[in-house]
Length: 125
Image (cartoon, rainbow, N blue to C red; front, side):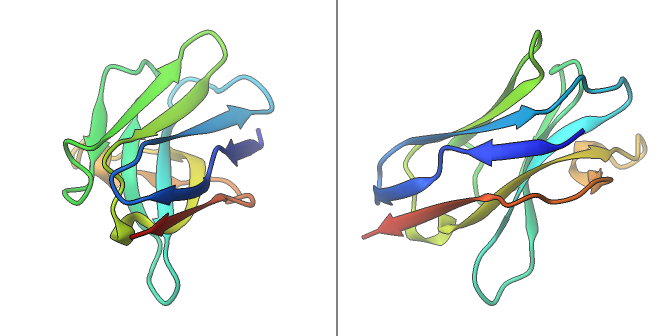
């Protein structure tokens, strides 16, 4: 299954943006989904993850209270609602499938497929 991220763009500090992740096919049970981001000169980091059922989520401390991850159960489309966007949120955002270590929780998402192109989020102050 290939994932296509979209919805990025240029926003001002404090604005909102919604990213979408569309899969090319059905997501098998046992896979979680998540959003990673990578800013220039920095390592790729997990921003948020969501279980296949949508019941469990994880957020990086830097985005808690501002970002919301969700899924459209019927289409397996995943979203990242970004509110009060800050300059430090500027990055290329990637969506991915992955596995969770149950003993470590949703923050342990390990991608299992290709990253794809990602979608660029640029923030002007």
